[in-house]
Length: 153
View 1 (tube, rainbow, N blue to C red):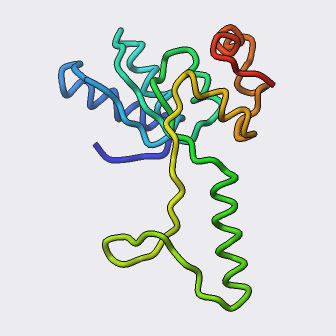
View 2: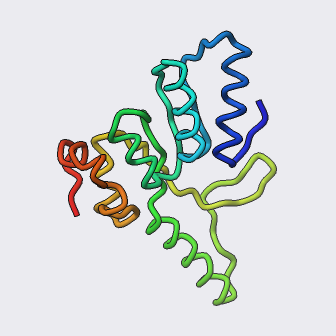
């Protein structure tokens, strides 16, 4: 199946793929939480419950995780990304050759920021770090799950 970052298109493509395989799917690895949400809609429509992973730890993705609709989302803490980027920029401004801790197969250097898998018990960590707002995540429809998993303002 061709990739897409458009949630609605992802839902349509997933529905077509699901039909092509006779409605049998073991799990879904979506490239972002928006795509995951649209795929979850199709799974629900077909009465299917399988593990679904998204990425970005978006408020909607975190809500789906808390509600048990999405198994996990991938969180890359903004402070780690910002620190790596600012260290790189400062090195360049100082006329230094920045250091990279990794390289792609073609030799392209990069600085790795370790992502985190976020399940229900880790949503509180994303909110506590300031990478998601309590008010956006813990709306009325999700408040009970926030309380259950210790998500606080």
